Image (cartoon, rainbow, N blue to C red):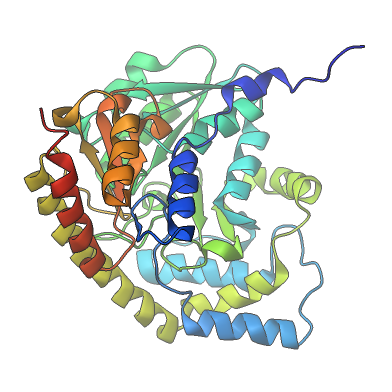
Length: 392
């Protein structure tokens, strides 16, 4: 009798290594230990009250039927108006496809673009699901090692050095996970020209858009509003992680293709979530989100020098998202073991670099400042005690 086995692609789609640490942390919490969470990319803020109220109203008024596959027309129009108001970029609402989270957007974009063995250039370190989705559609993710010298971002030289005959697209993220670094509009324009000259597509992950500190908020659509693919989400800036809602801005030629694909993959995003998201663009909700952004900046400004004082190296200051990607080489060359040891000793949990790629991954860790400053201060005090034995 032949045994059932998973598809070959599943060998290359890895789990999040931090989930084992999170499971251990949850067990310790259940046993009564105080755990400080700095591992999950989800701020502690609740969804802004106007959004919650709109969701409740949608449920109470019976808005629970399917919407069109590309999303509620009113929401697509609201997103387009947001781009016009905030960034001065004109986008036809028909080019905006609402999806179940940014993950749904990634599936649509890569499903529409990739043939088997097509290559997508991306950073290492980078968000792991990007490479896994490429593999899911039988493409080949090409992870390009990047470091502090380029703010952990790709540049024109990377494109020239790694472009091959099978390269189909380049995927960027600004602000980026795990590094919190940004690309300026001129840098994006430089990369875009290099990609277009070679007949490729540029995909930009902007799911942390809005969460920037000391620098203006931007969009890649300011470079070319018609041909760049942009993926965004209501999860991070808008505080709607569990509502599972995102969107993609696509070139006009691809809209009918994405519509057809959406019909077959997920039919439509959550209807109550879409009605709730209409309230995300109200002055009341935007004021709440701006206050939250300011608090995140205060957390970053506290944690960044504190980590450096502890002995972690942070060579590039994060200007966005809510992460600090720190070198842990002073404490050995096994970041995963370091994370496990410090969870055991201190009750502080954060993410090993191996979740984000292979380049210098064993000597890097990611801290998420998704908890109040008072708790961050407790975490720093605990880590200072716990690291005494690690600093050889």
